[in-house]
Length: 470
Image (cartoon, rainbow, N blue to C red):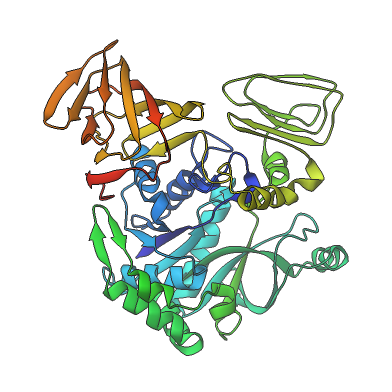
């Protein structure tokens, strides 16, 4: 059976300030109503015989994955939590072991969570061709027929035809310079390396045993000691961290003598920068893509994305990317957006938080938005989903005031448990054991005012938590 494997470990720094470490680009709706991750699992679900997808992701994103699957009605085939970043070869290895435990003949379709495919019919035809090759023992990669001389992708040179629309891989090529990329496109035998693969799970493990046995040993040890946690599988940290960090390309595909490529034109993009998002987006007659409240005068070939909180006006500009969020705004020439990583590096070195979190932070129970911060106070707008509850907790360095704006909140404060209705408030003294719960069917919205000598999120002592965060 076909088991889609969704690799969702990226941090998406090239789409800052919209993409942040706690909410990277795969979980954002960039080109439609669904996030890139949701588009990927929906696309996989339409393939003949496809089983529920296996997702490999970071621990910080586990609830986001579960919620986004639930939102589109897709059952999970397993959510494997990577305890450390070790590139794609180890991530696929644990997914292969997970699939084989359920299906001895599992075939894996490996896809990054953050890619766009516009022509799903062409993609399905390519998967069908690759499936036939995989049944004959080939490890198949999908090569995107290049539309132009791109220097940001690796390339694949195809060799002899194998039938089924596939070819033997002659060699993989690193990202070329402009002149070399132009030659590759002109020759017509090169394809972009998409990072998507299809092969038998056992065949992949056999090739790992041959070419990268340390990765396989670490993956086996990590899965043998894995633990179930709610709907997730916690891969053993120490065993997985002992694995070499290597991509599937270097560890297996460049070494095996059974690598095949299926070329495909399917409207593919890795949405690797703001300029690539502009290139795949629908644009007006002046070449502009606007989102949100934008007023533009004499503006051409630009991407302008306004936040929900304010309007953006442009006059006499062209080839710009302007992205506004509640706490950060990016203005860049379209041909320089690849350098946004330099901004992220500066934020990291300065010890700032804008590369890690949005002002609005999502949690498994809902969200909070920091709407005001001072030297000894912080004001948050908190939304708690129906049936959800914050952890039973206490703080050593701050007290809190809660004012309910809508809904009915059940409040625990030390030995008292009581309901707090709309327009009512309560005080949580420093050191008190407390919890906020929504037992209703509508969201609870409240304003929280924190005051004290320290207001950081690490001043939370969790005593009990339904989400396993204690």
